[in-house]
Image (cartoon, rainbow, N blue to C red; front, side, top):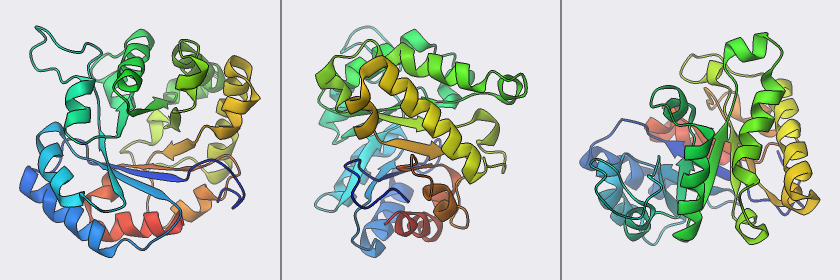
Length: 256
């Protein structure tokens, strides 16, 4: 787990993906709020767009924050099916995921798209969580570090120094998402060091030191503690295990 003296936030985000109706989301969020023990970790849930408003009501006044799973970079216009950053802010979101591997590999989001989304989130007063990670083919070919460095640079290089203070990065190896496979704690820590080194090169040591870097990829209650033990692992982006209060709370409590 990150050192107690670290200035970086410890963050745990539950990404519900395309699960939970409004009523189901309220039930889950209500249970999380009721059973979450006070601690130093910042906890957020990311429901689908249709459940944002009711879940926002369910967590209002609690320590649990509301996150969105994606965003479109334009403020408004003829973009059928899109949701803008100001809309998400008005719905109560303070955090937005951008560049999740499923957005990259299923929906075709590229680095330029992700950079625009991050800027839109910042302009709307929210915090972007920029997701990066390599595929199994890229890792097996020895290109994992270069892929991740490139993804980090594509977003961070376009941000001002002030904007960088509100940045969070999430490392999610594509080969470990929804597959049941998990990067070993040593593998996760090694890639987090690569990301922090990239941040230092691009934006300076101050940005590198203060930016939380989360791990995401088949995180469960029984491996959360070991992953969090890495000096450069500042929290977790949780998928399937966030869909039940018991498993998600176990992970949150492991984070502090």
